Amino acid sequence: MSAGLVTPEALNEAEWLRCSSHIFLQIDGWEYLYYQHRDRSVPKELWEGEDVFFRNQVAANPGYARFWSENETSFAEPFHSHVAGAFAKKDASPPDS
Image (cartoon, rainbow, N blue to C red):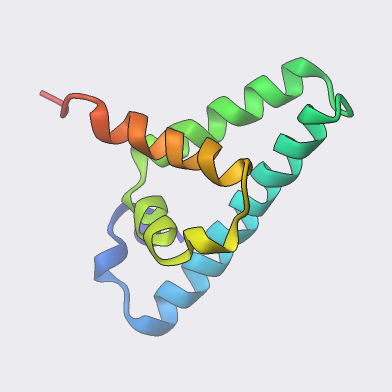
């Protein structure tokens, strides 16, 4: 799993399928919390912590970018735009020096 997050291109097809299935479950959890937050069903602090966690995953792990490019159509609005915004922010960040 770790190799797939950091170097997804190094995985063979079967390994990538396992990794992307795991990422799908993670983003599905993010989506669930997103809608629970919108309905005020979870504490604000829980949502904020989880959202930061997943945004950090997007920023730090190329495997998330590959997953999103292959599977973004699996997620509906408004959550789709929320995640797309996290990728846009990552892409707009200056590269590490």
